[in-house]
Image (tube, rainbow, N blue to C red):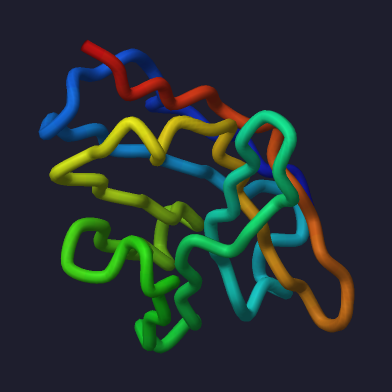
Length: 114
């Protein structure tokens, strides 16, 4: 499984960004997809995850602001990020769980700053 993420960038506080992550290879074996993030000096943390059936889970710090969605036909997962805060600044990584193995995308930088 290969994951290609895109959509990061620089945005002002209160702004929005949408991340995308397209899976290829043995994408048929993927059951769970999600987004993690890692800020400088901090551990990587789960942001949101979604099953193939569309059940989503969110970290408390993004509930009500971020929305994860998935297009199974395109093997693509999205993360709509609204009301962004400076503390959301991090490298965001796409993740896929296929059978018992985790796969990671290359990471995309999100910077929230005025």
